[in-house]
Image (spheres, helix red, strand yellow):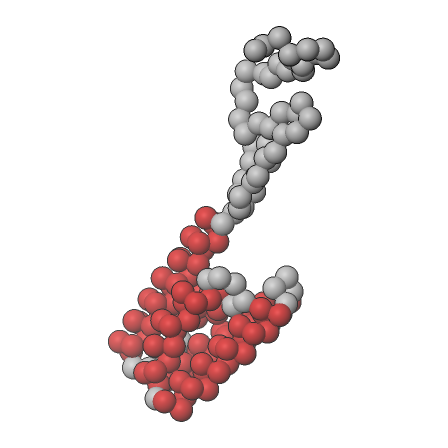
Amino acid sequence: MLPEPLLAAVAAGAGVIAQAAGTGLWHSILPRIEEWFAHLGERRARALNAQLGATNEALEAAPEDDSARKDAEDAWKTRLQDVLMELDESEQIEFAGLLTRLRDEVDAARSADRASAGDNSVAAGGNINLNARDSAVAVVRNEGGIHVNPPQPGPDTTK
């Protein structure tokens, strides 16, 4: 059985894999995990990398399926525990550190992608395009009120 700090790192790593798979974060974590799997020998690394790929494909196909993400996380907890058991003590500590750092990076990236808004506000996690037509007003921020005086029918006297 692994010590508690290593089990916490396993949970962090499994969560990272399940959260990042099928998202834009995947390609930032994948090379670093694959690099560590290489410590286990070519055959074992190839098998684990194939399982990483299968996880990514499955979650890419079902990005909103929370149960699929939970299943992937559970599966990777077992796999990562097995990986840690194959490493010597110093490698265990180093790999656990990587898993914890990856969790922190993924959490930070996911937080940056979230938008929040206060009362009477709208939040968006991407671009917002505002268009105003036919005497409408488009406002990004207004603290002092808006007064609109639409043009009156008749000849234009502003020229």
